[in-house]
Image (cartoon, rainbow, N blue to C red):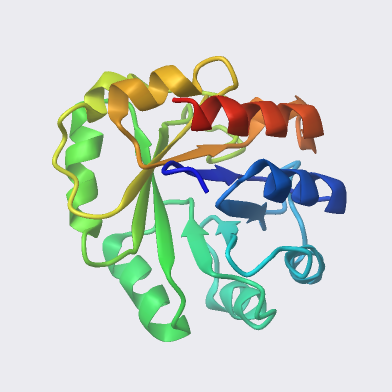
Length: 214
């Protein structure tokens, strides 16, 4: 296992799940958001997670979910964490963690340094912060669009919680991203795809190798 945690997100097939595990990913992400080309139903998540060894984390990604949606996901007994990727407040994130008893990650949309400073409000409310690029106003998806932000904004930032880096990462830039930010976790989705929602086994393997060499 690399000292750097690696999350491959948006997985939807047994072969790409297997490739991510064999390549050394520490976490796998399953998107449960109907508007996304990477959407998988709760029962699909259960089936895919059954292929994953216990030491690899299994994270469901949701955006502004209703409690009923969360309950259905938690009931699969397949997850090690729930990633909130919408406009959830610190209070909502804390309430989800308290009610459902599952570790909560929160994606933070970043465009300026003020966005990183604002993430401090989530310290103590979530288990991990994931800094992602802010999507344009009116965009159909809250993430997974291959956008990146200015990584130097994270250099020397005081972050009061475990954290990771997402948004626009690829085989070609992940080493640079880690060198700039010293991120302890990197999260990739569109950067290992051949088309939106279609993961590429070779790209998954190459990304993990590039990340481990960073």
